[in-house]
Amino acid sequence: MPVEGVWDLSVSTPIGLVEAVVELRREDGLLRGAAHGAGEEVPLGDVRLEGDRLTWKQAVTTPLRLNLAFDVTVTGDTLTGTSRAGRLPASKVTGRRRALPPAGEPRR
Amino acid sequence: MHAQIVLFDGFDPLDVIAPYEVLHAGGAASGGLVTVELASAEGPREVAGGTGGLALRATAALDPARADLVLVPGASGRVAAPDEADGPAPDAGDRQQDASIPVLLGRTLTTGLPALLRTAVADPEVIVGAVCGGTLVLAMAGLLEGRHATTHHLGLDMLDATGVHAVRARVVDDGDLVTGAGVTSGLDLALHLLEREVGPRIAHAVEELFAYERRGVVWRDRGPVPTAA
Image (cartoon, rainbow over all chains, first blue to last red; front, side, top):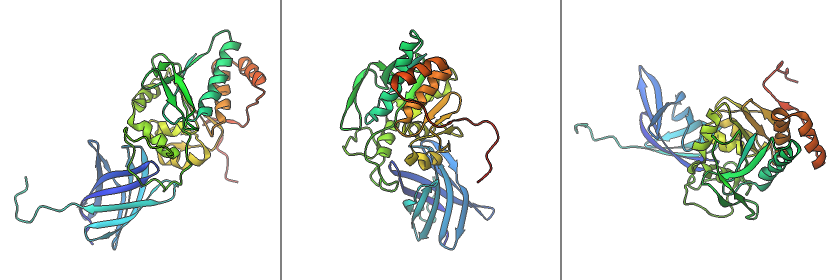
């Protein structure tokens, strides 16, 4: 299951739901990613894909500082799973992949 | 030493009053070497705490340029399960009652408090103290990256997840950052600061007056690392 693209995530944290944008891409065959938010880009750590199970680590800075470990299952253009803040119990994550511009349409 | 203790909506009154009384008594016992006032990021105002709405009055604006010690209390409210919060993250307009402690602490992120605390943390002349969930106010704002600190035992895992070296001790002294564990540790934290900044005789006099003796080791990142038992 290809997972490349821009994903809009909704992550439960101890202070409530936090929205996050994650971009995944392949460079030299390796899966890499970055999180976007508040004008900054934070690289994702330990991005791994096994079948349709995707895991990565992410240091969130806004709206609060939190180290999160994601473990999600990708189905088409949606993903569901969990994120863990350190030793805290896992909480829910859902995500949706943004639609790409149709092939052949000029990209601006 | 001039201390400002921060009030924010939903603060825990005992987190505020315990260090306030200790520092105030330290001032009296030392002929005025310690002064203490309650401050808020918004300036003088009445601030409702999280325990039955018990309110205290901030008489000053929080101003790290005027303070030698800035002390942040925790919040009082419902103890939430860590995965319970599934409403939207806080915004300034949201003021429902019965909020959980992490949500109350998280609401401070939408106020002017984090910017003022950032100034205080960045200034080596200012000691930043925190009691209970107050450490999480600083940590969630991203101000304690890589530091050693403690908080209420129910918040230690959260503290760890913010990039802080969370230490399970009653008081942790990390130089210009001094933090206390749950609620009543504010007494121990303030007595430790009195001893460190003013002197052991003054700290002892306040202990005696309050009929309270500190307990536990003040943790510092010093000496041999204990081997695993």
